[in-house]
Amino acid sequence: MATRKTGKKSGPAAHRPRAAAVVPAADAPAPPRPADSARLQDLRRKIDAVDQRLVRLLNERASLVVEVGKTKRADGTPIYAPHREAEVLRKVLASNAGPLSDRAVEGVYRELMSGSFALEQPLRIGYLGPPGSNSHAAAVKQFGSSVDYEDLREIVGVFTEVRRGHVNYGLVPIENSLGGGIVETLDAFKANAQQISIYGEVQISIHHALLANCLPRQVRRIHSKPEIFQQCRNWLSTQYPGVELMPAASSSRAAQIAADECRKALEIGAEPGSAAIGTVLAGQLYGLNVLFPRIEDDPNNITRFVIIARQNARPTGDDKTSLMFTTEDKPGALVSVLGVFQAAGINLSHIDKRPQGRERWTYTFFVDALGHREDAVMAAAIEEAKAHCRELFILGSYPRSRRIL
Image (cartoon, rainbow, N blue to C red; front, side, top):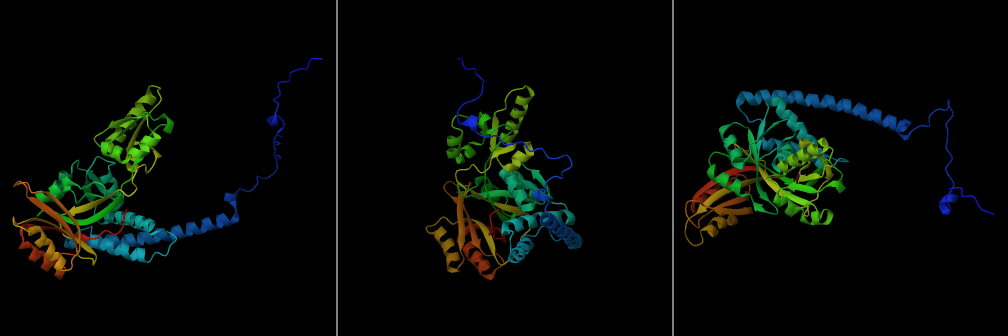
């Protein structure tokens, strides 16, 4: 007798019991959700009460800041004072007992101080653009989101606009942990030594993110600076061995190109496939999603930036002094200069050089010494060192950066 095919599946799946559908009664109340528990609601009410107190305290602080601003404007005191910033952060972090990390508390206070600047007097900060660059991201981390930022396109442009008073302060990279000294900044100091002062320093962790408006598997080309491709070489060769790497003038420009290409692809009904490697800030500015953050091969890539100004910073007790000098053309001249600081017990934390420019095979040296120019020991050492130099300039004394943002 022939058997009739029923179309039912055989094997283990055919015998797996199905879950019975639960149909709630029409009048049955919905089961309580975890989010609606009495305990959670009570905690949220307490958080709301704390938030109300915080807002009142923040505005009480802001009222005092307004008075500080009036006093500063009356006597010509600079609005941004790095010695006061260092003092505030030191006291705040010393009183932090957790559970918030010091890094989180510092981030909150930097934004709070940024809002304070806006209340005292709007600040304009010049940086090496384009918008979304690492210099832009560093400026925002240092000064917060309540000040105005000016893309000055070139490092020399930042110096020029600070010197002319078109911006209040500038922020420029001076040294990278992987690539060494930033020659454009060192050369700009040579040209502006007696007109610009280093007012502060900032250490920033450099992170690269893959940005795109498509799925990770859809990426067919990646735009960025050649140096950034090099810094992400291992990650790219593992995750995207077959994609086309498109060099761009900057990581910000790469983000712009990728955003434009994705938009045009969607307009014509094609599948987008363009990505860029840049900062998370660039993704926010140009409308790109972060597919993968922190794709750099070396997580210890740190760039030191300096804040430049037309005024000098006051001592804090934990300072650094940057010097620029050329030595006499005689044997042991450099050793003699460095020996002065050794004899004075002053630690030199950094030394760099650039071609002097006026004579072949002569050099301008850049040195960072721990201490402030107003310290008696430092002042005496600088005066003694001048005897071994053709010329020596103090680029600035400023609070020493202890934390990486």
